[in-house]
Image 1: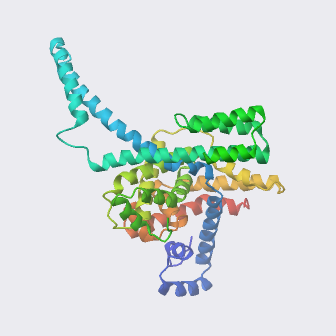
Image 2: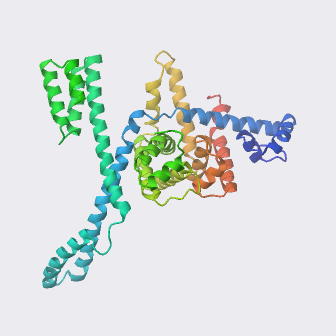
Image 3: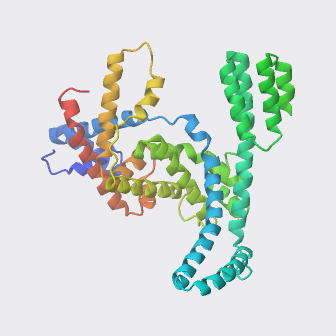
Length: 214
Length: 193
């Protein structure tokens, strides 16, 4: 700890390059004759060097970043669904608390509730804000777009695995993954054809190229 | 998309209905936000979840966003708030797990097979001790230290990000560095580094 009149804060600011230019040179002059402050500066500098090195070792794997966009849109789409569902659920909860001991009234309110749900879903009095509709539509469109990209990526990776590494197990596993992703689209047929060709040993480059163009 | 288009212009495009602009913003910042959160929470899964939450919140708030500060500052603000919430929740409900099991794995993959394995282990151990020392800072000290040191934010931007006065940011920063000095001093005094 510096015992001189200069504060430790100044030593930290100096190491952190936060000292105003007007104070920097006088502080450097001071350092030449003050072992306390010199020790403090060296010590803080070591701290920063150590932490910089330790944090630089933290790397972000490319794989972890791959699905961020799609998951953001999935989250947006899920929230939109939830909003409508929670609105209906909240509506029922209120009804239950008022009429729970009156069977006759409950039956009639059930009918009323059905009508009200229909009203809530069409929402004639307060139309859905434009943003929410755009948001949901956009989210679904983006999910589909990213799904298509994923399907194509898996197909490309399957073919690369087959040709460069000749790894049948990995190729098959990627094709199955692609098929799962492609559920409900014409890409499942492409995956099936490739799987069939892989099993019969006729998966060749010409076929793959023509299929991937599809 | 043209990389020269600045963030604020992309936001304006998004606000006028061009949805692709948000994709470009995510592409620009997902790695930065992820690595900031990874350093803060030190767990890949949690960092990924919070990154998704950051962009989710940003998407929903972007319609009414006014460019009072830089877009990146605003994004870091969302990330910092979520990271601080995460640390508070974790402090209230501690989970006893093996420490630092996630981060060094990335380093192991990148390690040079021909280098000295003993030295590698020492390096990893030292890295673990240092990262744990950073974890011992208070959430605000940690946020100030991380944003200023690793994300390259100016003190003014850190202040905007964390909703603090610039002077308060400096106080947190001083405390953080002094605390780290106290925690790490044994490492160099005992020649452990």
